[in-house]
Structure formats: C-alpha cells, structure tokens
Amino acid sequence: MTIVNRYYRSFVLIAVFIITAIALYFLDPIAQDLAYHKFSDCRAFFGIPHFMDVISNLPFLIIGFMGIRIARKAYRKETMSYFLMTFVLFVGVFLTGAGSAYYHYHPENFTLIFDRLPMTLVFTSLFGTIIYDYVDRRIGASAFYALLLTGVYSIIYWYYTEITGVGDLRLYAFIQFFPIVAVPLILIFYKNSKLYTKELIFMFIAYALAKLCEHYDAQIFKMFKVISGHTIKHLFSALAVYYIYTVYKTRTSSN
Image 1 (cartoon, one colour):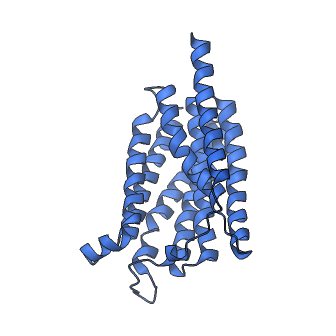
Image 2 (cartoon, one colour):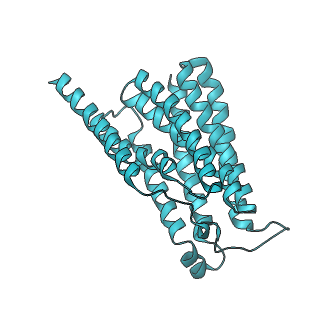
Image 3 (cartoon, one colour):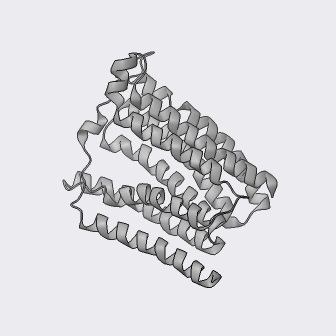
C-alpha cells in the first residue's frame, strides 16, 4: 500500500507539472504591460523618487544578511546541496531588496530585471528545499539545480523577447506560480509534523496578502493617503520571507 501511495503521489505531482506546462505553452505570449511600471505613490523625499516603494525594500536587505549567516552554519552541518539552496535563497533575498529598490527608483523593463532575477533565486531555492525535506533529498537537489537554471533563463528569455518586440513572460510565470500550486499538494501528500508546515502556511498567507495589496495599489493609496498598496505589498512580502528565515534558522540550529 505504501508503494502504491508513493507512486500515486508522484504521479499527481508530475501530472500537475505537465498540465501546467502545457497550459502555458498553448497560451499566447504574455508581454509585459507597461502600465505595471506606473505606481500610485510617486512622492519623492530626500531626492529619491518613489521614496516609499524604494525604502520599503530595507527589510529584504536585513533578512537576506541574517540568512547568509545561517548559510555559513549550513555549510558546516548540512549537505552541499542544502547549503547551496540556503545560500542562493538568502543571497536572492538580499539582492531582491537591492534590485527592487533600484527598479522602483527608475521603473522600466530593464531595471525590472534586477527585481525579478533575484526573486527567481528565492522561488527556486525554497521550492527545491521543500522537495528536499518533504519528498526526497536527491529529487529536491536535482529540482533545485534544474529550476534555478530555468529560472535564470526565463528572465533572460523574457527581456530578449521584450526588446525584440514579442515579449513573453510565460516561462517566468511558470517558475513563479507552479510552486504555489505544487507546494500545497506536497504538504498534503507528505505530512510531517516535525517539519515546518505551519510556517509555510503563514508564509503563503502573507504572500497572498502581498499580492492582494499589489493589485489594489491605487485604491489603498487613495484610502490611506500616506502609504500605497505596493508599499504594503513589500512589507507583507518581507513578512513571508521572515517566515522562510525562521524555517532555515530552526532547521539549521536543530541539526
């Protein structure tokens, strides 16, 4: 029965992967909407345009720095694959803070690369770690390396298609959103009370709130006057990253 369940769980995850990939393949290319660069809070302070959206990236720099210190401990106590996932993830968090600040200082397609590329490092490293811890270590390590390369390529591919006039975000969308579908299935199929399911649920809630605030950027700014939805999105995203930090800190300290 255990073998049947194992193959069934693997089959479902592989099927979801294939269905998602096929669905994106048959979609028309998704160009970057230039309206994305128009944020509601354009106020400048201290000579910095879009000041609130720029400065609200500071928590990513702090958490990224703290996480890199954890990676140093993981190097001594964990496998090389786990160390690399930890190191790449928190370097990605740190660079997300710097890259997002740069992007919001001068929002355009080119500067958006410096925002999205580090986020891709975070998505792929976290997803690889979850597979590593919940499903299988070898599969998790292999998934991390494969997704990392694919994620970096997705950014290069997106920007190349933008400058050639046929912008295509489909591959980047797959890298960002497939884990959102797959991780809940993994948590359901591979239940383990000794791991960090609770923290992942809190992370998903914070991330969902971040995306909601991003969607209602202008409405929130109109309501509160002093802070926009996009600025709040950064803070909720940083909260999600903090939950990720607690996972790696607890796991590395306990081993």
